[in-house]
Length: 240
Image (cartoon, rainbow, N blue to C red; front, side, top):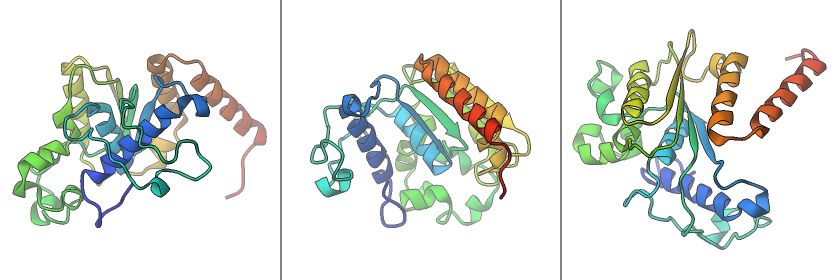
């Protein structure tokens, strides 16, 4: 997706939605099930995954973005000259590793965001301090797009996260549950913002696999994970 500082919100979510449309439009060619799409990510990727989960059909954010054909995909992929604007951008499950979800809420905390309002991650995404345009900050915040028909969410957050406050991730799943959306929260002890305690933790991986297996209704996810674990055990430890 297009990056800061040249490209500001909402170009990133437009690109993520374009990817979903492309994959759904080519589901048969790629051997995909169009109703078994999960969005998952860490940090900024988790933010985009959350926005995908909550803004399908949004009158502003779901407007199709049509890039130049050369930018859509590798020439060898099918349909590279199409925008697939008729395809849905909805996803069927979301896995959120440490996303920033409420740009307005984080401004109430005593943190570096108070004194460096224009240099915080959320301000850089918006192109201005949050307080300068609260409506835009709200539009960019997953917390303010929660709806009862949202897909199931799983949230994983480290208690030592130095970038995204843990209260953000605690309040988000609670708000989803209140709206009637399945939402699971796992706090990883000793986990930082981009921590191997979260990403490479077998116990966390098992929970993610169970979550996806349940809500995507597929046995393939568990089978792939079990095969990967078995192969790793057979290979034994590797040198750094």
